[in-house]
Amino acid sequence: MKKVFLILVLFINCIFGQSKPYVILISIDACRWDYLSRGVSPTITKLKEEGASALTFQPSFPSKTFPNHLTIISGLYPENHGIISNNFIRLTDNKKYSMGDTSSVRDNEWYTGETFWETAHRNGIITASYFWPATEVHIKYKRPDYFYEYNRNTTSKEKIEGVKKWLELPYEKRPHLISLYFDQVDTQGHNYGPDSKEVNQALTEVDTAIFDLEEMIKKTNMADSINFIILSDHGMTSVSKDRVVNIEKILDDIKCSITNTGPVVFIQTEKGKESEIYQKLKSNENHFKVYYKNEVPDYLHYSKNPNIPQIVAIADLGWELSDNRGYAHLTSSTAKLGDHGFDNHSLDMNGIFLTNGPLFKKRFCTGTIWNIDVYPLLCKIFNIQPSSDEDGKLERIGFLLNNY
Image (tube, rainbow, N blue to C red):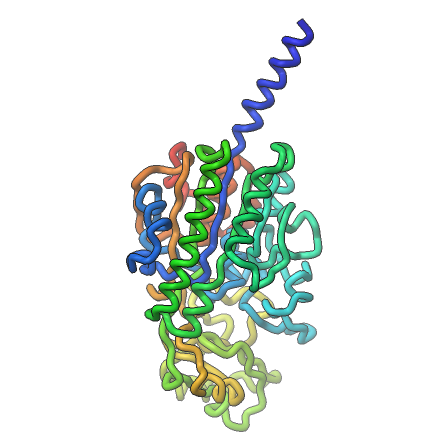
């Protein structure tokens, strides 16, 4: 009798334990909303057509990599989660945050919002990540349970093998959310422009990796339990060495600090000089708009953070802003041919969003999904309480689920 009871308990634990879903969250950096129509990504396109998807996926402003990956995983606008750009200065002590600086990326003091990794940890959900930006933070409960330190030389095959090892872990150690990041579409978009054959080749490479991931999963006993969410952090648009505005030249000899060249420029100056700089730029406003920090349009959600400087200049789509040093680079023969970071409502800045798996509707397509709403979607999927300060709203995305 005791043996029968023990078997029954184990059976119940198995049934209820296995009810916790599995999600693989894949980010294809800079995969613009229309790239899947090029006929070079059959695996991703099939997943999209058979699952639930959005016509476009709107990033937050600025449409840059690190701010938007943090937004996706926290449900907060960049002004609220703290990472206001890929690179920026903390105005209180001039300390710099840079996505290429391992020390700052791992320093928890920059991150002011709660990510899903932290929410999941608090609720006993195991997570893993292969290169999702800002997953290497030093504080354990604020990062995934399993993660790899970023190495751009890692192959797609190695990433798939890493996911395989995680899925083969014993149930009590196995992650239920696995995030995966691919950067090659972004790299080629910058180097050769969004309409290049190199971008198509990069997308095909990622598509092949996702095919290999699917084939690997089919060989496990979890094929009917895995849910995919595939998205991109932003899109990409063409830029040119002939479309660059030198902000420093316009300001001439007015003393100030110009940082963050590209689609968005930060301008900081000594107290009392703000009006002079603003008026000078305003009178020369051509292919860009200049704002006092508190006048940045509300729809951009980009005025609350203390590290946003006194004056912000935002380029028109396809134009770049710079100081003298940046101008020399952006107008050289080796200048990049693609960029992002522009107004997030520009269609070229929109990315892809698709889902596929038992949790999601089949052959369903909606209009535009906002990336701030992915965090509450993940909380709904795992039936956990989201952070109280999120900007995202479940009602704008939850209808993609079968049981919503």
